[in-house]
Length: 208
Image (cartoon, rainbow, N blue to C red; front, side, top):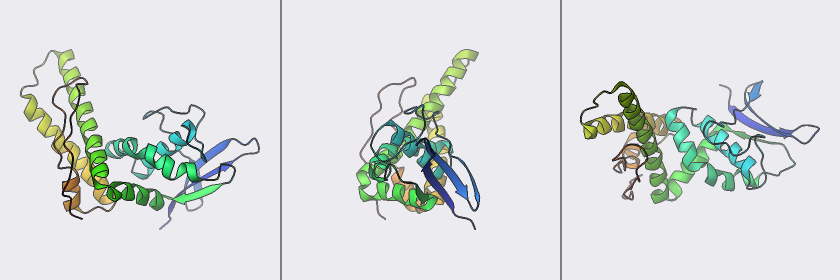
């Protein structure tokens, strides 16, 4: 089985390029400007600016599967990943890292400080629930439809989104189902649609 890798290099004009490869095939890595547009000029590395932030986000989103849950986890962790990994790369030298290395870094970010890691996971989950619920309210408003019991609607979407996060945490990051449940156990802070402030309980007592 071919190992997925990422490779960064500069052309003769010193412009940065990053590709994703498997075996002998490589293609340009998507910058994921749809998640955050830090650097319209594309990725960079070797310092802590906007280009490295764009690269960190692109690497995490791709390694985590480019799915809804993975994208939200990437949004939570990419700034820390930028300072931890991307800023440490030599700016003028080419580099290469495996997808496995990227995922191990995310795994470490979750478990080195469980309060921080669990908070990031539940923040990502809550944000996706908010997006889903707000979308449903917008669609219902356009149709002048009644969504019924809000608490029931919210609970249904929490279960749906939790399943998406379970898949990424378990199958992509190799975290056991039991620990996934514990990471996601914090009650969602979503209680009103359309951008009301969210409050999150601090996660604790996770047993690895």
